[in-house]
Image (cartoon, rainbow, N blue to C red; front, side, top):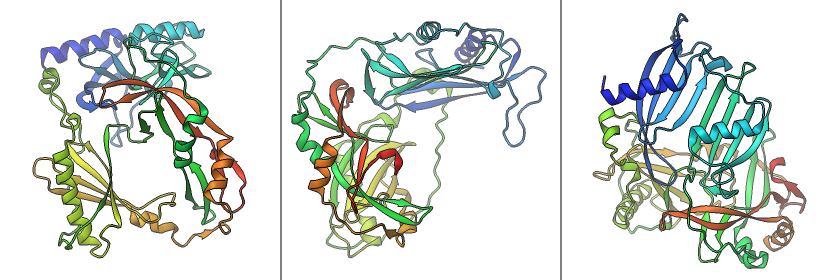
Length: 419
């Protein structure tokens, strides 16, 4: 075994009191976080001594431990004891919030209310979220701590991005409500939300969340993608249809790497920038394929966005029509960055067609202007720090949001969660 690897495994065993455990297996994973940093994580799995091992169905016995360590920072990303049972020889005092916070600070090196703050508390568990001086951050991070009745740790999890260092403060002028009305109006749109149980479609007006920089010079979209991406929003236009066919080439989604690669701290290919030249090449490739599938639809498809994942370039293409659909069909092209060959194409149109026959609930009676006026009363503007990829640091913003929706067939105002 590599000496560095041996040292790290021994460090994990001592830190978590695993004298009653045997190392079952270990792997080294390469990850890229939401701010484009390459991380190397040692994942270890431990089985209690004298306990039957893992079953053929990959079921771990109660008390088995999974522990993940950032190799270079030597901070822990996850500690989990299966079934809420631990055979560790360590126990902790988690009687009060202060004790939990001090324990998290000691383990992570983060400072409470500077880099993390409480999100919620339940019996025998706490959840904290990332912040900068008690202002939440995006992309964010979560810390979870759980323990059993014997005050033994059963779960520690640290996910996402935390700013563990002081940053230069920007002007903290909060945006004025009237400053964002035009942006709010632009973000309100009509969506068709399918109800699969009743096989109907609810048409509603709602807002797409948006982060607005404090000086109004820039906005940042809210995305479910937990990785950097390039927003393209360009129409695909062709003079001549292509002759490509759908491809389904297998490729590896494994993030496992050698300990040598991890020690050398190589930058992941998924962390490399997507240059203008790459964007143009990918656009040419996807246009050739889309024109092959839909030869008469030039200008009707949009190259929406692209990002890197699994060592491949991922390009998302959507039709311009059916903008109000709750789930819009899309094509996702998985492209080899070395030669720009398409390895696989994910087509979600079959899923979108599932509700093509659904009946709309009533006729459209409310127009956008009325919806904007009604939703504006429920608008929220919450302070946030948002990561700017170009400037490579967090900037002070307001999160423009609204938790209400308007039924387009009646004007009824509902909570978003009640849809």
